[in-house]
Amino acid sequence: MRKPMIAGNWKMHLNSAEAAKLAAAIKNGLDPNLKHDVLLAPSFTNLEVVRKETASSPILLSAQNMCWEEKGAFTGEVSGSQLKDAGCDYVIIGHSERRKIFLESDEVLNKKLKAAFKFSLKAIFCIGETLEERENNQTYEILQNQLQKGLKDISAQDVENIVIAYEPVWAIGTGKTATPQQAQESHIFIRKELSKMFGEGEASKIRILYGGSVKAENIDELMSQPDIDGALVGGESLKAEKFLRVIHYQSAVNNEKIQ
Ligand code: 13P
Image 1 (cartoon, helix red, strand yellow):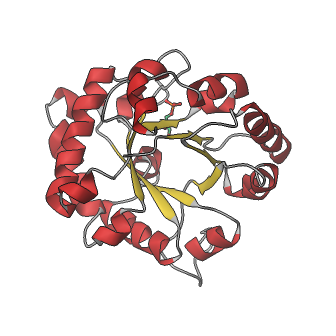
Image 2 (image 1 turned 120 degrees about the vertical axis):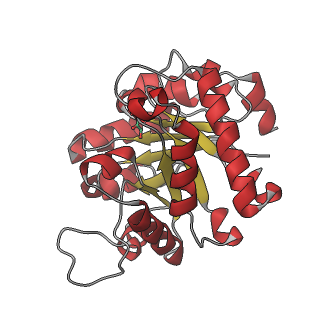
């Protein structure tokens, strides 16, 4: 069965003192019997303080981006080996803000994923359609394209180190969440595509998170969908109390999964 994951993407927020305080509050608020994964993705400059604060806890550490090269003349970039050295377990690859604002192509993202695995990092690979694409009935075509190009030539063994995050771009930071049914439909489609690429057995093991205006108020309903295996949370993960409520969601479906 798939172990759910609740991940907080702090984006370009918080100084080091604020990041340490938030990480400590999340750590101290965790139910010690929690059976699913909790992950925090601070800025590069805050990885170290968050690593220290969460050292004696099950919280996983993730970066938000990385370079596909190991080292060299790549001013301003950070490599997978540096992230591993900084204590990261995961790296987020292909967030829509990276695709849209920093013009990262599917080909570049594919190289980044391969580099992540080379340095024993796991990856949260983000995909999702824009509002215009959804309105033009292109959602599935876009998701298929992002999966096929992003995961090109990735082995079935490496794919076990990938968590997919379905983040419809129109739902990010807008307060407009996809309905649990809309998200579930996309997740089913994604899993079918993964089955075609890696076989049904592998696809059934891959976690698919939903992201886009996830809140304390809507997490229970989202997690009650059978193919929603967790959430990638932006704004709400910056507020300890709210994020702790997201982490401790109530869902018969997903609590059953990890019995
Ligand atoms: P919000 O939860 O703020 O909509 O952001 C979602 C997101 O982009 C997480 O990666």
